[in-house]
Length: 177
Image (cartoon, rainbow, N blue to C red; front, side, top):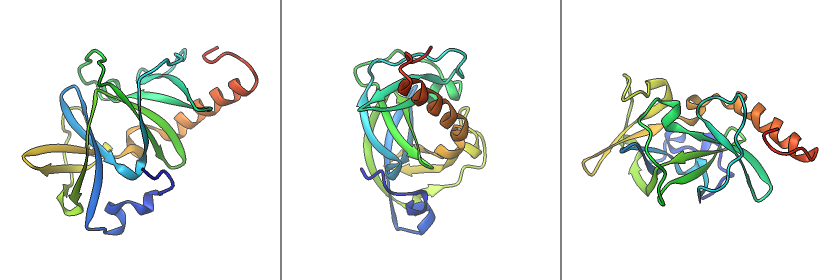
């Protein structure tokens, strides 16, 4: 998965005939992000909790020297909480030069669909409004919500959190203190 691709490389923006999606589940619902936004998929490990953090910020992790926040979509969208399992993963994504982790129940597959299969969302689905979704994908009898990462989380605010943690780490202070 190539993290050097930018938003302008998105098939939804430049008119490519096909789009590749990383499909995952949250509380039994299938959602997806475009593959060019995903840097890697990792197992859930130790996270440092942040005091006074937004409810959807699970914590901060250090992955090979890079410190970034891990966010929980279920908390962000008031979805039912389920216990973590062996299949729970962190999608490490990049959007507008911000790296962050997304806690998901299970990564299902990488799916290639025609970009024409993405239908606009004009109403709230579950607790996710149309501002947070690029659309719906109907394929093989499945309905998959394609998320808009830039709108889903306020990345500028998260960048400030990440910068604060990185500075703390460089100054030798324990994370989360």
